[in-house]
Length: 341
Ligand code: X2X
Image 1 (spheres, helix red, strand yellow):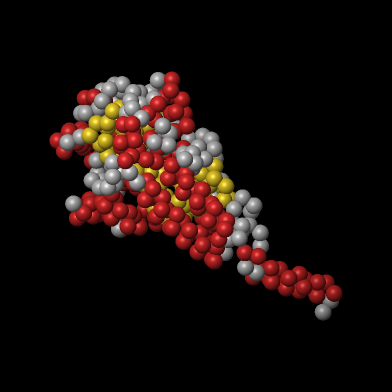
Image 2: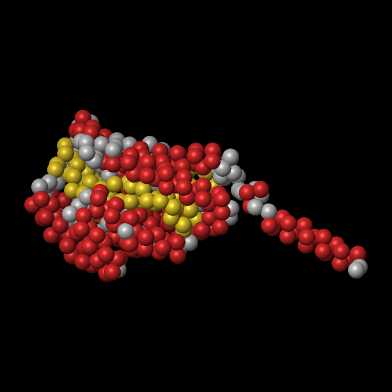
């Protein structure tokens, strides 16, 4: 053999050894970016911190996740978060299904007005066939979902008046996420929905350019101290908002199988803890609601008859969105929910 061929052989041999070496021995990038709409306070942000800490510890620092809170990573619209994740601009995200529903329209299953009567119904849908199908749909778009978590049941607040029936929403400017089902729902209720990022909404409440908003009590209303701008809250449980901890497929593929296992297990563990946190003071206790009152909010609770009036007004929105989400998926969820009643 010529000297030249020997050289080629040696290079090939060294290269194949390197390629076969477990990636753990190779270097991952020094920082994995994780996106969040909210800040570090409350169960949502706290879970992101816990996830990053545990991953670092369990991988001896190989996987170093940095949380970019308050939408720092997407800069533009919060409804772009899923796209950034699919592109690998964000490695991880702990994101709301609402923000991802423009890209994965089946996720609107959780925003169908007045669909979920209880946590039990929600859990059954997430853990059942619809939940599994949603994870597959997300994965097909380049994002690996790791575990369900929760923002919570969304309640409406405003600075103007108590909302006891659909008529009370007439003309109120309500900030909503830029996901079309919310525009439809609030339009049907006679309100004036305004699409805005969560970060911008804080200024709008302070300046009074919008009157109200809708978000869960423990995960958002409390950590953001919305009582400083919003006097009234109505507990109407009109939509549920799961969050999902997910990783970009690009990032996932760069990890060793052993590290993937650590990531998945840690995500499941942290998100089970997160879900409990999102329900604390709401389920089996009134603590979270009492705390709103203590901070000066006036709380409206609704009778079954009051709720029916809201449901009737938004029925055409529900019917329209059955087609968007997919009739089979909605039917499967309706069946599961009926069985939990
Ligand atoms: O923007 C919102 O309302 C929030 C924080 O709940 C979501 O990210 C959907």
